[in-house]
Amino acid sequence: MVKITWDQGFKRMYKKKVKNNEELKEKFWDAMKLFSKEPFHPRLRTHKLSGKLEGLWAFSVSYDCRVVFEFINKNEILLIDIGGHDEVY
Image (cartoon, rainbow, N blue to C red; front, top):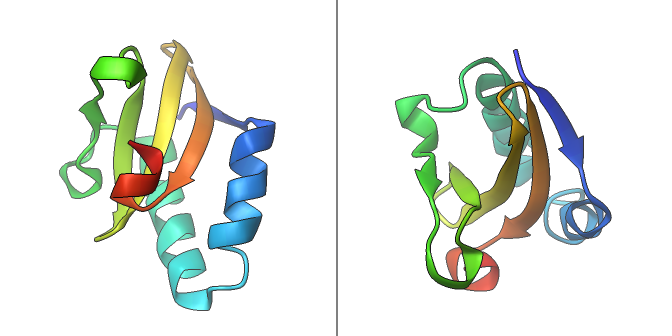
């Protein structure tokens, strides 16, 4: 299991996008449970980013909700951003 840390920007976006949306909140926490155990599970569609976000990764929470993150090391991950495809990329 990997250690997951939320940066301040992620916390703000979580409150804005997820906190008051019960359906998305449930999907987010389901995805987080799976992600903490197996970051590359096929259901998450985890992928490396390129361009201005090179060095970062993303996984899907729902059809139009992505989480952008960074591997600090092989056992620790920093969550950076959450939102729709066009918002986070």
